[in-house]
Image 1 (cartoon, one colour):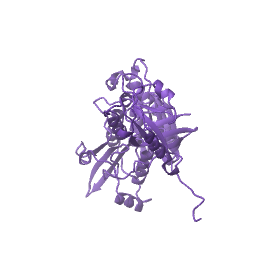
Image 2: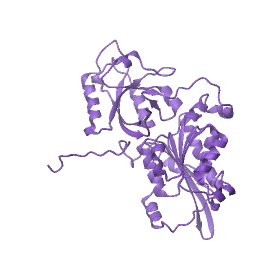
Image 3: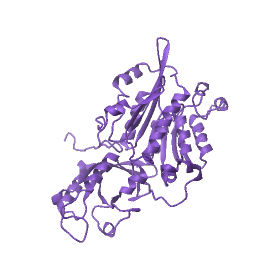
Image 4: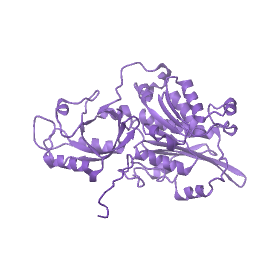
Length: 420
């Protein structure tokens, strides 16, 4: 059975900060991660961390034989967290640092202790090798990077790190919307070495798409090829070994596959769909990279504009940045069926897609320091400029539109005593 573990980077940072604090007699600190669960296909499971509860200073017991020993009250706190009003999808993990060089392993104490179930190891090396989302299989990290030589195709991007080719090859990326920016995104991801794709679009190529759909041909139009088939062909032409799951459907019908993704790109036309896709990503703690552009006409002149937003769990969202507003969604709903073809051009889609892929690569292979978890890059196509003014205004802020505990599958509690 496949088991994935996900946690927002802001939560992992808070855990690490707490575990590094000194205690007056304990050699190390410990705590508990409260988690929710979500299903994967084939009986798989995603464990989604929602909050951290440190063991109180007075709840440690002096015991020189171990690094830290918890008292009975700390155990009761953990059991109460696990109960959580009877929710069946709630779990609690004991967590502590194994902060030393090399791949972290369970100590003999970890293996022999019982009562709290399997433990997760949090090591500083994991966030360096796995980006913002440590991934676990049955309690152990899956990112075991060997000493193989770098893929010769990717040697010119070795500045991303000696193991960057392996990290990119293991990454699983979803792309929803494949006509304009999405077609650029899948092409670039294939070139940088991403090994696993979920590509989603419910449309076939038309003649009007040839001005912007990378990889599309006149023969594809005549054959009425699906856009996912073209995306798969583009990916395999660069990386024949890539694993591609093509879903010729609405993204809402591909959620079983999208749940597995480490990062999802949204290249959708509708504000409502972008809102729904971001909500899906927040529920499953998946970083979301949104691309959008438009051409506006006023008084016989036209302006090209667009933006790329990196929306990470816990950080500012599309609503925070003002990309999504109730007014825009209501106006869009009022024009449903009347809007016609939205203007799109290949070069602006290419600019936005390149920024989006840049944000993705720095997220999992940061070559210039710590990964940037939030971004809002606005493109002015008339002035040929990229600006980040909205991001500057929201620096250091937390999102107020999504609650940290609204994660995992929807869960309903029924009672036979209602009305009794």
